[in-house]
Structure formats: structure tokens, C-alpha cells
Length: 112
Image 1 (cartoon, rainbow, N blue to C red):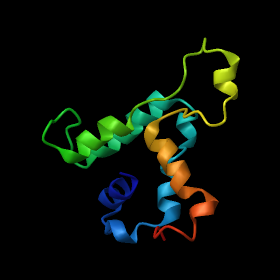
Image 2 (cartoon, rainbow, N blue to C red):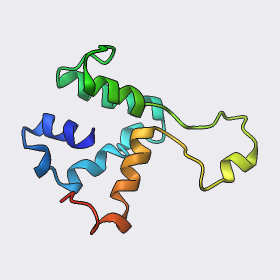
Image 3 (tube, rainbow, N blue to C red):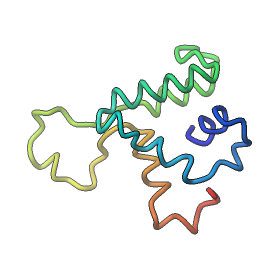
């Protein structure tokens, strides 16, 4: 989704999207840690690329509906939930990108 988004905005082929172009999608400063605001920004980008996010016949919109899931626990969750470093937290799209952009994968993935 990140490659597609950057390619749609820049006009370059997805295979030529560079790592440094994708990295800002993980954590855009003005949205901080607010998953809802970050999801809204991704949605603005996808709609600008011509997608109706509620369309059943749009494969990009369908994938986005999966990736927009927020895994953040409720504020009243017990401390052990917040302390669990293996627990998924935040926007699924961002969680996935953080994993892909992690230094350990730099040489393993084809992302330039």
C-alpha cells in the first residue's frame, strides 16, 4: 500500500519507489501517535489517487480496510498489556511498514 501510495503521488513506477520515500508514511510528525489521524491522512492520499474507500469492487480500498485497523489497547487496559513488547499496537499499516523498514531487513528486501 505504501509503494502504491507513493507511486500514485509521484508518478514513478512502484518498483522505483525508494525507502526514504516510504519512511515518512510510518510516522508523519504532525499526526504523532494518533492512529485515527494518521489513518485519515492515508485515506486522504488514497482518495486523491481516485479511490472510494467504501467501494466493494476496489481492491485498493479493500486492502486499506484491513490495514486501517487500530491495534491500540484501550486506555484502561491493565499495565501488563502496555508492558508487553510483543503486543501489536497502533495502526496495522504502520506496524507493517515499521517491520519492513527495520534495519535488519535492509539487505533482505528489494525496497531500494
